[in-house]
Figure 1 (tube, one colour):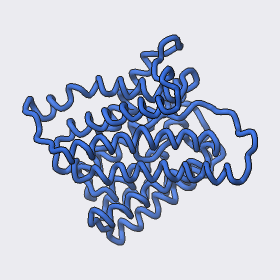
Figure 2: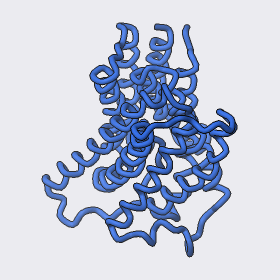
Figure 3: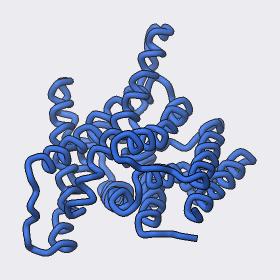
Length: 312
């Protein structure tokens, strides 16, 4: 079985994000989604400031304007814009439907990788991909599916009131927003893949976070909600927030980007899908949520798919 650094980083990223989701479930009960998202990313930026010097030394990298623009744009699209669209769709559709829509992440990354990066999947990897997607689909069909966003790591949003007039047009619009959010996540990682391969990981990570925070400020300003960016005056469990930011965002993001740096984007995207399975297992073990036959089947299918992909 071949497990390179890229494959290992992708699996570890999924596991770290799953731990973060469990922690974010407690935080989101007290904080609005925009407040939590901005606060967490600001904490992560502070945590990761020493990373470039620890990984790459004191020498500044030779980034050209294109690399900087792609890094900032990837953070804006993949974290700020995509997450905002995802929150709106999740509030209207619910976690179950958004879980199904989220399964489009890997196919989109694979299609974009084939079209723009020249990557290819072998027959065993295609079979593994099918098993992984089948396992995630089984999990998504459970009555209480795990609330997880595939790809870029973000917390679940605050509950929102149902629309006054749930017309079919509103439902289709919400589905379109959900699909658009997943498309933006896929575009964000594929567009930065060449930069990840050529530039230092630590610096690219920081640039993406700067783009994300700037994007969140812009989105909040356009929506007239700049006040929501500050947690001032709110009851914040800072110990839990710091732990969630470190494991679910800081560690998960670095591992996630490292997976795409050292493994083909198509392979990394499929292995990232195992986050749903990790969340189900952690919820069963940590929160004592029932696993059920569907959960066992989903775990079995996904693990089988991962083994096939790694053995190829």
